[in-house]
Image 1 (tube, rainbow, N blue to C red):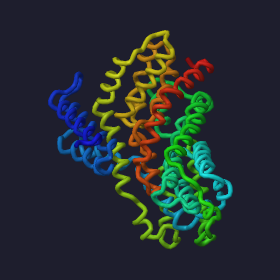
Image 2: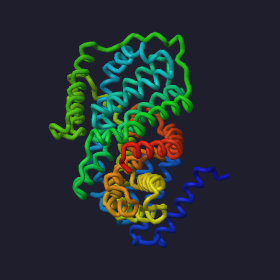
Image 3: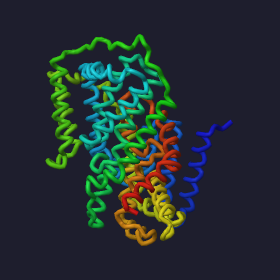
Image 4: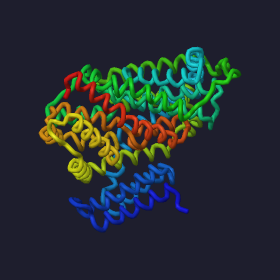
Length: 457
């Protein structure tokens, strides 16, 4: 009997073959084949029938062998800042774990977060949200918080393979990423959207206005919902026997030196708008210091065991998919096709608001979250005429689109954070699917009312 996952893959392969032989309306032959490859890759990622790095390798090989993209285009993702933030995250995480700093910070926060499992999950979410205001990189936030959170899980008796430990990994992965979509400079899609809007439309967004519009619902309310979902899907109890923190190992002097390096790194990350140095290169510089063998933060054996190349391949594949969809013109075709289906009507504000949100959500599934703004931003003037909304309001609905995640692969930092925690990415799907439904049924209507109250629409 064919299971659901196999059925999804078979359907994707059949659709891919059809698109390659008879390209859908508006697509060239090459675009049809590219669309087919994208469908199969998405099916492999979504079903988890093969590891994520295998699906990424399929994407690379298929695009190159069929001559749909050059090797330079396919592998350009390996030179992206996101990949080097991943590497830096692995190194920083290894240093925090190997030195014992993570265990020490976990022990210090033990009394505050060990009162109950709910307090632990809620506290880690608050920490992730707070880091979003001072660190511009979600990968950097994950690199800092994952080792601390997992060390804390160890001290509280949440062993490898337990639901509680998985819940800790999931709340850190999501908490260091999703609330920050509501903070202008804190996630890559936000930055891309504002940059494209400035270059192509001459629009600039205020940090405070952006925060006021998005953070109450997409930041605060959504975070509360996420905490509830994690507690529901990954229930656990902190055992009484684990109530006392275990003795912390490692050199206090080395831990203090590492803390100083991390604070300097955090300082540069927090002030990137002043000095202009990308967060990836700041992280790489910190990693270079930490990898010097004589300093002992990340000895060579620890480095070899801590850098997960399979995770790097997966993230590179997600970036390549977004790039290929955009450069091939598929993104525009998909967006315009969805545009024709959605029921836009001038004067129907709620209907238009929901339709614009669905446009962004649907486009993001194919382009991934970072690629979506580059596809939809040029359509903003046309959408403004169709709906009667201001161009600024049209652009702001993109935030709803790229922050409403259906599949984890759409947001690379979610995958990276789970990898840093040593956990599978599959548990994320329970949260993203449930959160997707709750967002559509509850959070989007509330967000519409909030926008109305502010006079945005």
